[in-house]
Structure formats: structure tokens, C-alpha cells
Length: 268
Image 1 (cartoon, one colour):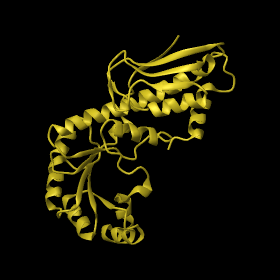
Image 2 (cartoon, helix red, strand yellow; image 1 turned 180 degrees about the horizontal axis):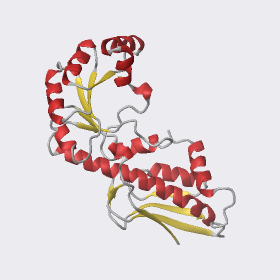
Image 3 (cartoon, one colour; image 1 turned 90 degrees about the horizontal axis):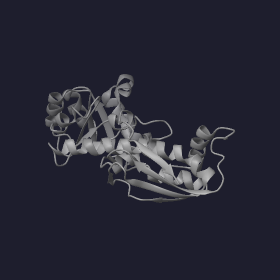
């Protein structure tokens, strides 16, 4: 999902039309260094930035590795002007991705305190233009990507139910989807979850319900139907949802609220 055009946009945004600041002669080396504990992510994107600029880049750690303050995660060698032009974009994307990965790793650990099997998944609440980076960061942290795009799974949401009715929406989309594509229905009550399963849902998503209602909803589902909880779930409330018996807890928090990890780029 990371294209040359994307890297070009990132650099054009940062470099602008007349870069005097980085007009530095000669060659240099550079190191991207963690300033705090984190889970490393976004390194492939950083390498792609330097590759585009003709700078040799080598990862010092693997994506998903835990790093401490002072650890080097990337080393580069090349033309000084090109190194300096790539440093901020690379540091920004690694910092953002590592923040997502670190938050995901913490969320998965919290879920494991109450369940050995529940999956912690991301959502489509990603930053426009950065979905690929953020979804890979979720995986680096031990989470599940959920659907990458609308085409990854058919999801009947509240607006579809409002327009068509629950049963009719399920029927309509079931007729149009591929046999290989799962159908998920977002519901607002335990009773709706039971109806969705009866209508043919593969997955029932209990949305914006308290844990007690999610637990009841799960108990009403027949065997073989996947149960998911989502909607405003935070790291603090995650364990309560993971303990309801759902198979998946999805959190927009992983991508829209994760703080960036702090990295520093040093040359010389």
C-alpha cells in the first residue's frame, strides 16, 4: 500500500519548493534513535523514503521489536543533503507508527490478563493516506488489522439498518457478496444480535454497549457466529470487554488516539 507517489507527497510536503536549509555538501551517516521505550514500526516506510532519495538505509532492529531509550533503529549513509531531506519524514512516520504499535502491544497485554484467545483489532478510523502504515503498525504490536478496506468484508451498519431494515439489509448484501466474503452486522442491543445471527450474519458486532449487555448478547448467539465488541473502547475499559466472551474487541483508539513515540535523528 506504500507507493512511490506516497513517498513523493510526503517529501514534497516537507521540502517545499526551495530548500536552503539542507544545502549541505559531502556525504554523511545518520542514525534514527529511540528516546523512550517503544515497539518499533514504520521502518519499511522510512527505508522507502531514503531509497527514493538515493540514500542507503539499513534497519538495526526488526519491526515489532521492543526498543529502549538510546537504541538505534535505523542507520543511513549517503549524500548529506539527501539524508537531511529525508530525516524528518522518516522520523515522523516511524514515531507515529511506533506509537500505534506500542499502544497495540499494551492493549493486547491488557486483554491477555482476562482472556487467552480474544483478538484486539483496529478499525477503519485511520489517518487518510496513512492506513497502510498504521495497519502494519497494529500487526507489529500484536493486533489484528480487521478489514483493510470496504471490500475486505461486508458490514451492515446502523445507517444500512435505518435505510433497509436489519433483515432486508442482510438479505440484500448476502445476495451480492462473494462466497469467500464474510458478512458482519452491527447491532445496538442483545436482541438485535440474535436477529442478526438468525438472518445469516457470520459476525455480530455489539456496538456502543456496556460490557454487561455485550455479555448477554454473546450468550444469545448460536455456535459458529463470531462475536465482536466495539465503540468507544479505551485501554482502561478494554479488559471488561475482553472478559465478556467476545472473540474480537476492535478499537479505533489504536490508530486515532495512540501518542507518537519519540525518536531522534542524528548525523555525523
